[in-house]
Length: 445
Ligand code: CMC
Image (cartoon, rainbow, N blue to C red):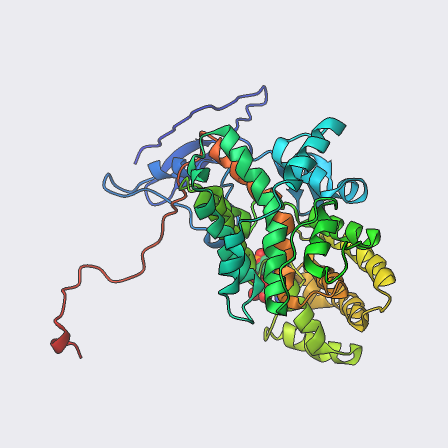
């Protein structure tokens, strides 16, 4: 049992500090020295740690990938402890206040803010690709009348891969760019078609005179008028919501896009995986769950009973808690202010906002939530805004998906050009039986 030292890429300074991690395997007494690069050790470096020659080697076990860096990324910076969120280095607060969703989408995709000419070109490209093939309407019609719009979005964005079969040429930069434009441009059209379908209303074609958010409002709400004129304050509120949802580092749906994209499938299929992940109540479905929860609580007086149930572990306070933010979610602060603005435009203040404000106040002072570091997240207030815009709860995750599309694609583009990336293929700890003898059906008890 001799000591074993393996050093690669290590740095020694005057005080003898090295960028390495020494690990002693107490099963064998051997010591290993693993390089630390960018605050990480390589998972595969653990594999050399074995008890015998035929041992597979040590793996790390991390369900939910809570402490795994799966990629190098220059898209979004997030510091959960400090409540910092930056897209390409720009603070979310500044982008929400001064930018537009299309400009932010450009920033995420290209890495830099556009010049006036670049922005105009980008806006033009997106605008002229908002239409979808007429056959899309036909298969949308095939969905049941009360189909969940997120399911329809998931199916229809995946189906776009059949309309653009050359999208699987992901090694060609021009081709990738074309699909990027199409995805950002067509997502609102598909989302609005899904909405119109559940409403039993005719699909409306995009209006290329309007901006991104205004066109979406027109796709959703235009009726018999010749031209839909969106309220600029609602357009702005929607744009801010899209900005706030545009990217969020390696969250569940982005990891799904990257995971599926790692097989080198076309981006429509990869983005469909992102929509699927976002559909779940612990991710994009949370804003829908928040509204259902607020409706169930109904009145401020019912809050203490509800919170008792949460503390007893019977249910979760939806819209609270985050895997990464442990002090506050900067997006929640911006959204709370936007909610007030929207209510001003739509006139009626939703009484559930008062329930939400009271719930937040009580929870933030409650021992359980303090001890568990639980704070309102982006979804706590977004649902109230969507409801004020006349959206049924089923549409809430769809709204999230429209905004997140640019972030999914920025991550997908980064991944397909990253030489370090391989097909996503984790390991497991096998817990089942081994070497069993097949038993004929008539002999099974
Ligand atoms: N209400 C009550 N308890 C909670 C909550 C909550 N919302 N969230 C976490 N906890 C408790 C949990 O019960 C556990 O307690 P204990 O250690 O005593 O067993 C502890 O906090 C840690 O929870 P966890 O589930 O291990 O934490 P996680 O990091 O895996 O989960 C989360 C993060 C967002 C899934 C979770 O906080 C949650 O379910 N929140 C409600 C759903 C929600 O609002 N999701 C939207 C997330 S933000 C939008 C997005 O990016 O998708």
